[in-house]
Length: 151
View (cartoon, rainbow, N blue to C red):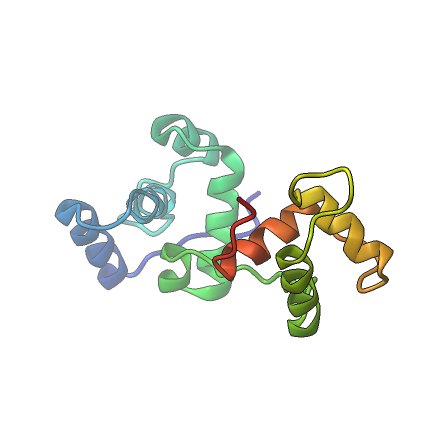
């Protein structure tokens, strides 16, 4: 027995059919509209199983299950639009650390090296105890953001 039952109203069904027939939306939105139309359990809906929908529209069965859930829990508009990420990314470097990195990169390269590398900069920032750890990729992104080239 399905936990989330999709029952579209006449207005919702009409809106989805217009969306599909116009073909002007993103592929994801159109696929979600098709899934909802096929999953419709109302008297006018086809009431397909998740497996049938998955097979006919070439989507994973979990996509169908998640879409049913989003439709029931959050409504039609949220089921059609993409969710924003809920993850919060903490910045590794603050302004002061960026300034130290730029000053370091603009200075003389260590003895034995002709120029700074991303890994050398990351290692030196850790040596100088500006940061506990730092990857060369974070150094690259920071230097790119400030339009600073190591060449």
